[in-house]
Length: 187
Image (tube, rainbow, N blue to C red; front, side):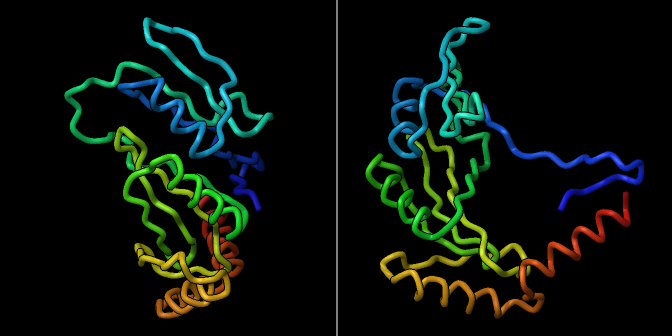
C-alpha cells in the first residue's frame, strides 16, 4: 500500500542508500564486503576525499558509500544505526554467521516483537541492524535478547510470546491497515 496525498500523487519512497564518513576506508570496505557480501561498484576521489560505493543489488548503484575523512577525535558514532531488512529467518541466520566471521563486535540477537534483529558494530563503532519483520505488531519501544542457539520454531515461538505480552498486540496486517487509514486521513 502506498501513502497518497489528497492531490492523488503517490508520495511513497523506498530507502536507497546511506553514506558514512570513515577513518580507515580500506578496513571498512573489507569489513562490509565480508560481513554483508557487498560488492564494490565504483570508487574514486571527490572533494579531496576517497569514496567507495558498495551494493548487493545490481539495480542499485550503491547501498552504502564509505567516505574518508572521519576525524580521529570523534569519540562516538554519529549514526544511530544502519538497518537492513531480510526476507526470513534462514537469511537472518546467514548474516548472523557472516557478521561473526567478519569480526563484528557486540553481536546481539534481539526481538522488538514486530521484528527479529541481529545488532552488531563495525570496526569503527557504527551500529548495524540486520532484521526481518514478523507477522505481529506490538507497542514500541521493546527490545529483548533472543537465544540464537534455539531452532527456528523455538525462536519464532519466543518472539510471538514476547509480542503477545504487549497490550496493543495485533497482526501486522491489521496495524498496517490502521496506519494506512490514519496517514490518508491526515493527508
